[in-house]
Length: 323
Image (cartoon, rainbow, N blue to C red):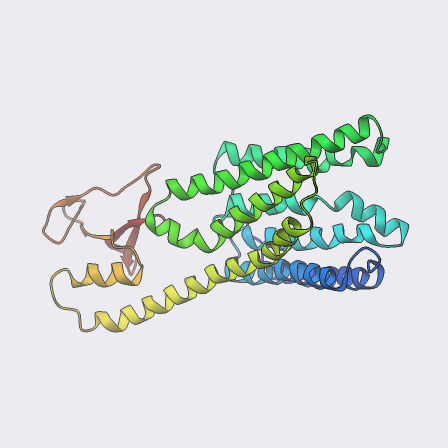
């Protein structure tokens, strides 16, 4: 369901207001649990997700990535209230604290479409939710000793496995993708995979006999705060690609050589595999520049076709990488 511009504006303003209120509460209430540097990095991380989400939602309102990024920031802020002195805020933070990890895994596995495209990805997100929304909170309900402590350890172990699995899924998607798709997702996929791996290591380090120190968590905090910048880099690449298409229009005014149109389009769209198919209405088929028949791709193929129309009449099709 497409969200109207007015609803997006209202939700965006609400997110900014909630983020501002949470930041104020964290800076005034949570000082006992954080150092000055930790507070600064935490507030920066929360706002980087909210700000990037707002921008992404504005640029691509049909995509879920923007709202998901905002939700990561909001749940992250809410979780930080676990260190507040006020009992109600402390309880709220304790229950919400791990949920931003679930949304974080979701947004990475769903990038760039905003939708989970495999049963493994959906299973990983569901398992992470069940673990971090239920199993993680066992000590809050039945105490830290005995069964509660055992369930808490089980939650840490399961989280480590799930985060590592999500990281592996990202790398598998990378290997299975086309060259154009890899270029599109690289700024988000690789930092995201490394961040999840660092988080898995931190959770697994709870079971080591010798503490590993704060280094793994600091590595995660910095990488986590930087992830939204990767999403912004992708948006910038899209804008640059549109600019190259605008330059293409000027270039085509002087294009006359055979095949020059296809080469110009392939260069502008950064897809060297692009093919140009011309529509013959009398014969009801597509042909290439040499008159040979061209079949448009369909189904689950990694290539797709974009039909070109002029005044509502089909004239050609661009066969290109789906990414």
